[in-house]
Length: 221
Image (cartoon, rainbow, N blue to C red; front, side, top):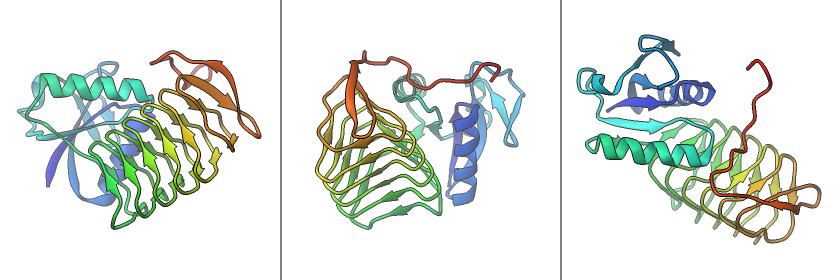
C-alpha cells in the first residue's frame, strides 16, 4: 500500500483525501500546500514541507487541484523535485470503470463517476461527482469533467479542456484542447481548441489562452 502525500489542501484536497481513505488502497501521510502553514491539519492530516517527505515515508503523490493547467504544472514540479515518488490515482469505491477502459496515472474519480467500455482516460484527469463518459470516449491528459457532466459515446475531449457543471455532450462530438464548456451547456457540434463555449445549444463565445483561469471563487471564500 502506497504512502501518499496529497498536493493541495483546499476543497479538492479534502475531497481527494476522502476518496483515498474510502477506497482504502493508499495511506495518506501528509499534505503539501505552500499556501498553508506547516502543521495545519487538513481532514486529519498534517501539512508538511518538501523536506519532510523522507521522514514521513512518502513514496507516492497525487495532485488535488481543480484547475487543469495548475494540476499539470504541479505534477511536473513534484516529478522534477522528487523523481522517486510515484504518481497515483484516487478512485472512489462508488465510481464505475469498465474492465476494458484504460485510465492513466494521477486520475481522480469522485463518487458516481462512470468510465464506460472502450474509453481511454489520460493522465491527471479529474472526473467530478456523478460525471460520466459513455462507450469509446477519449479524455485527454489533464482534462476535467465537473459534477454531473455527461457525454454520449465516441466523444473526444482534448487535453486540458474543462467540461462544466451539468454539461451534456452528444454522441460523436469532438471537443478540442484547452477549451472550456460552460455549466449546463448542451454540446451538439464539434468545438475547436482554445475557446469558451456555452449555452443550449452550446456555441463559441470567445477564444481562450492556454492556462487562463476558469474556476472562480465568491468573495470572502
